[in-house]
Image (tube, rainbow, N blue to C red; front, side, top):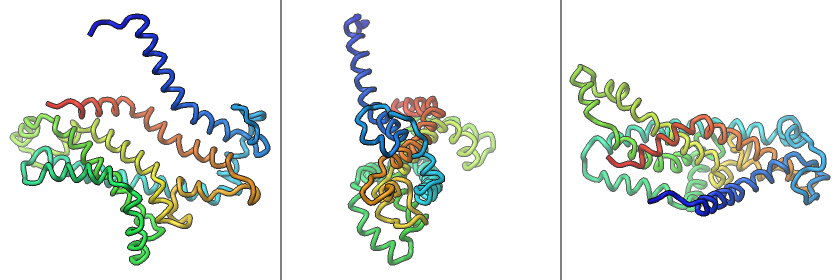
Length: 280
């Protein structure tokens, strides 16, 4: 394919700019709403008339803090634990799928992909009834287990692609030098799969962090309710006032960890996705 002409480059740049604006304008609008006062929310201008921090102070120390702070704590605990468990289990599963030959290996990968795209809403009612019977409703473990159903299948599918790219001769060389199978896995295979592990962990964390259906259906109090579910419980200064500013401020806060992860690990994400996309 030859070099692009100036006209073609211009069209590509304009198309990319349109996509970026389409993605960022709603985010910028939410940020703007978070800095508007309750009286200024009816103003249709994009920017706030008077910038105020009352929405942020409200979710950290005001009337909404009783909902937001416990929910933020719950989201961090649940998502980190679900991500850690999913990454560890998927790492062992992906190693076995890539390294061993056994009947049903392709079926496992196909099943993992099928579960990953399975409609979440269909699992809510059975889990709701079961969790209430066995005492897991509105608990941290009762939320981690369903999150594994979201994160583990896609983690197995993603990480198996990375493990298939690893040169197994290095593992055999380590064993020849006297390393056990566990030592070879821990000291040779895991460091080589680090980009894939980081990529899988971040994807799993994003999926768990953004879940709303399980959070709103399997919790009811601040004991385990995550942030996306807690946002639906925000109230305004009166029954007839929508808490748009507070919800926008909370949305901005919960987006920060996602943005920071993407910025801090962008090189590993790109390297991992590139390695996983190339077949050896």
